[in-house]
Amino acid sequence: MSLPIVFIHRTAEEHVGLCMQQAKYSNPSSRVILIGSPENKYLSTGNTEHFLLSHFYQSAQAFSHVYKHSTSNTYEYNLFCFQRWFILRDFMRNQGIERCCYLDSDVMLFTDISKRYNEEFDDFTFEYTWTTVCDLEKLNQFCDYATKFFRDPLHYETLLQFAKEIGDVPISDMVLFILFHNYALRRKATYGIVANGFFDHNLNCPFAPSCPQADSQDGKKQIYQKAGALFCKITGTTDYLPAHSLHFQGHAKAYIPFFGSQAIPNTDDFMFFDYATCKWVHAEP
Image (cartoon, rainbow, N blue to C red):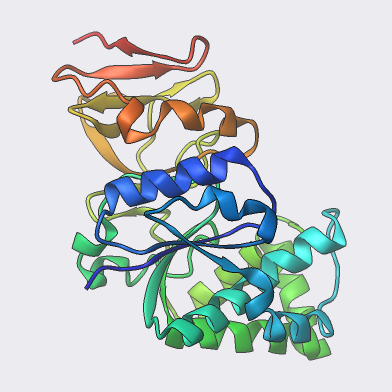
């Protein structure tokens, strides 16, 4: 059975539609769904679906009463980062969806997620907030976990202490994901390198220090294509690692139009994307 792919986004931005179309292109048998607002309904074309976020907001609203703000991000933004998981949970309940792939609106998917074995995602689930395969049971657990850690003062202190231990980072859903993934689910870190490829952490960042590193260009991962498939090249080797997804975080969103499968040259020889010219260039053999 094909895995639904879900995006949650409140505003109308063109890159959202491009990422949805890429998800549909690489997963033609999957439902591709945007949970959004009236203003971004137009981003869902005939082969994708749109649902109003406001219809699945009840438990997200309840969470707002226990949320505590401890970050330089705006209150509304950081709260919504947590609320989206309650929205997704309530949407899955409403639609009878037991398992889905959730993507941030600046993530492009290049693999048919439904053709992967479920076991390949066991450790990856709830590791990344911007790209995850999750089931309803664990999402229920996470929503309860989030409520407990914000409502109970002792648990909140534990969360604050954990954030300090991992680099004195601000409290975000990413921090709670790590805590949930490592200690509640007791899963090992994959750093996105699963299923014989990688789900990208951030185009602007290298792989985790414990992983083999990829060649870079202009402070971003250098991305190659061959026969329409995307890869990183492992530094100092002739090995290429397939890209299951790319995360165009921040200013990298400007490159999204050039990475849709229909915009990639699809040649038999390796080509790489030149960020300076926004063109695909033949790579040296």
